[in-house]
Length: 106
Image (cartoon, rainbow, N blue to C red; front, top):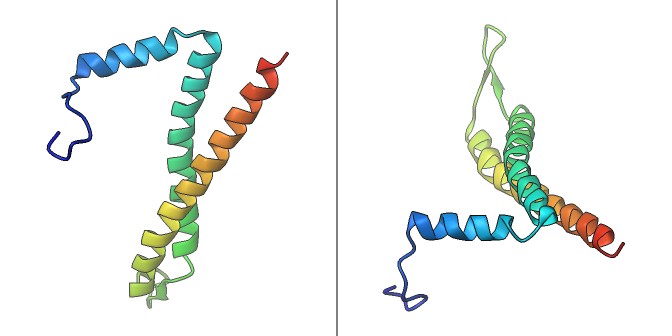
């Protein structure tokens, strides 16, 4: 409100009302919403796995066979996780939109 973006303070009830209105638009909207919520959790999991895989190449071997993180490991984590998260979310949303656009014309 100070930044001049909006003059309204949103409450939890307002957000729930928006959610219910979006879901009440029709069966396809609620399915699309559920797919997008599922996409968020799936993309977090996929980004986690990709980050673990990428970070496995930056470890330094210890004497007992384990690996130790290096400064490059931190850089890989902070680069790979956000980038892979963005890519999965964007591609997932494109696929969801394409699916519903193709099936809405029928």
